[in-house]
Image (cartoon, rainbow, N blue to C red; front, side):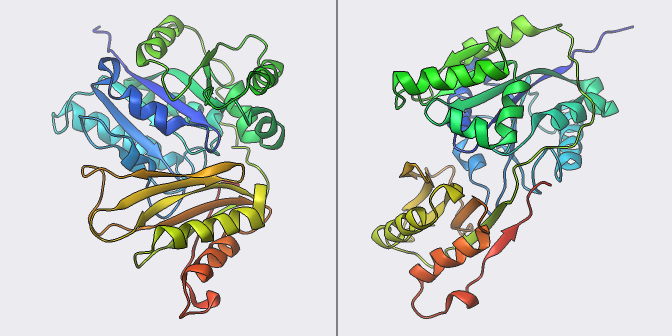
Length: 340
């Protein structure tokens, strides 16, 4: 019998804001992942991370219907099946790697189980490894507060300490110690400015090939309590000073209850479309969308992921600061259902 060569799957996970997309974008420019297909699982009304992942082959597949470890699990398997048949029938290029970037609140265990137990997916794909990013500055706090972060670490084959360029030695050491308390023999790598080479990852994953995996039962995903998401659309262009002032106000007003804030804003309708990202303890970051990632006429707005305060409330608060002709109660806000 001819032995089938299964397509290796890299599952990239990590808590909100830990730098998954920045690393993935750089890896996909390297020869090791030049023939790759990418699935980006994202929460929110507007896909953002798929636009930031720039590479020369097929466009990333955006999985929007919730978190891949719960609501979107069936969509993930259906997407893997569809891509395999399209590859087989030469409707798309023959990709050699499947890279899956999860949401920041994904529990990887159910995703791993799903890949391993779906008959066609398990026959045609193999899980090459779980790579987890951990913010070197905020690791101990996130590990203590969020079960997703703990589960991401406990299921990881490789752990990457990210943002080493901004972390102090003391912060990085504290994060490393917190990881090792969960995984005493964890394989920990470091990345500053998202500079960890793709070759390092591929070599490490190849060294894992053939190792048996355990605990792949179809366990329910574990999520932090009271986490919600909402999208605040920016239907008309805004100026950067307007948006910056509004964002700084809500970040100060709600503090650590805002887990992540990200979106796309059109500042002058002449190509000045920018990605906006922030959290309670990081400065607001802006990135220009290049021509090949910008969608003409696409949705613009801000996705807010919050805990203990409804994200919808924060979204309405944000829009009320940007709108002087409507009351906040009349402003359109789209709540997103999170995993339970």
